[in-house]
Image (tube, rainbow, N blue to C red; front, top):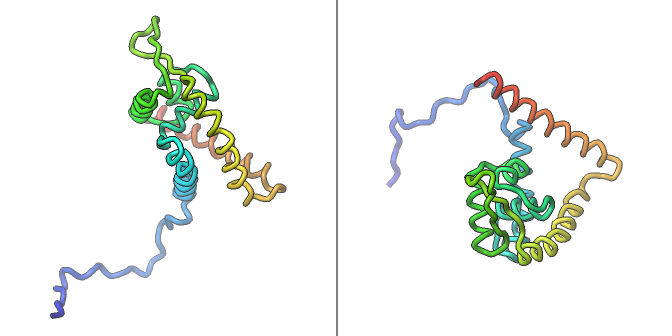
Length: 171
């Protein structure tokens, strides 16, 4: 039996005006999609092999790169919210990939560092990640790489400036 929808249930008419914004062309959306897809693709490697997710991976690699850090410092390096960092740290600690040492000067925070098991994961995973990056970057021609790197650096710096300006102007 076919049901005829009441006129009230009909979708609103489509206007003949051009859209104010086309999401697929909106640079912030495009960068977000790119970031999400890259993270998903790379996470297939370390999730399957080491059983860790994207936030745990970021914290682990940051500690591998910088040595001992606080959770706050790791959050600043990875641009992750403190809640996400805290959960990642708890997971890595549970897996015995990182250790926590109290900060005697501020007992509210702890120093985080890789354990020998965490160091092993970092040393195994880093070359895999570097190869992934090489394969990903292969779509950018060698002649365009310097310009691409400069554009990414400039967009990152401009975004940080816009965040700071917004924060200054909005309290």
